[in-house]
Length: 90
Image (cartoon, rainbow, N blue to C red):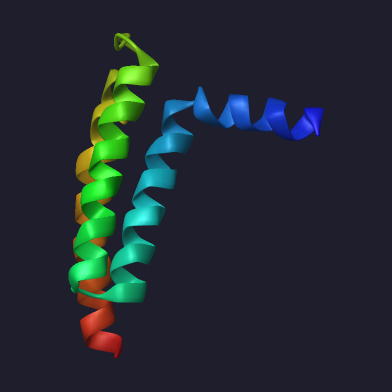
């Protein structure tokens, strides 16, 4: 259990990992649901969680500012790409 907590802390405090996590979540929401009410609500909730995540991270530092900022727009762009792939595949 302790090892899982240490791994989670390491993951959360590495901005590049969190950037890819936000992008993957956005892509899979778009891919799985396409464009419907549930998908839009999940994206709205995700953007609210992104703002809470930024607040939790505190002030941006020079080395971590770009990945922290790009997590939100990356989430939206990945969602758009996901529902485009959903539209083409299904």
